[in-house]
Amino acid sequence: MKISIIKDLNKEYIEAVTYYEADISSINTITSVDCYINLAFLYWSFAFELFEFNIPNNISDEWSILGGNRYPEILNLGLSVYPNSVELHFWKRYFSRISYGESFLELDCKELIKQYGDFSSHVPYFFLYQFDRGFYFEKTNLLIKECEELPTAKNIYIKSIIA
Amino acid sequence: MENGTKLLPAAEGDFENVANNSTNLNPNELSVHQKTAGGFQGHSKLFRNGRQVWTQSLNGKITNAGVNSIPK
Image (tube, one colour):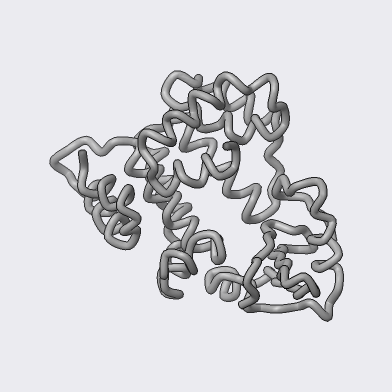
């Protein structure tokens, strides 16, 4: 397992960011899409999740400012490498919705899944679940198990929304 | 104030009441990024039962909200 993921699992989030940044900068290895996603998620949390993330994890103000600048850059960088990643597309739209009030509804999310498929990630279903708990129950249950097996900051957040 | 961005619990009408009252304005409810980015507003109100309801909003829409059991 990558050191970045281990740091993320250990809730050593500043160190995790440093290692994720090194992962995506490496020219010798192919960077997993999860590195871009987890890194963007941490930066977004630094920027917007004051009570839920920064205060309990002692994230300093400078990281909040850096996070706000960096999370969209990381998402776009990830999309340049993985243009068909449904999860990268999902987070881009989801963050815009909950941070800036931009429109992103059930139908938009279903369109993303239709366009890019859900074989690589069940993550968009935590959002869809909030619109129809019965219809998306099965996919969401799979997602909860995945989040429990690998409790990164992103997965802790997802589980807190649906579990 | 409109709850237009985050799917908040239906019973939490407190959020809108707090955010709609300018006397509850409190920039300390915002992250540093939100303070420097501009356009965001923070509101909070301490209720008699010890709950502190807080909201973050952008252009009149609540983007995030919560309840702290221990007032800051």
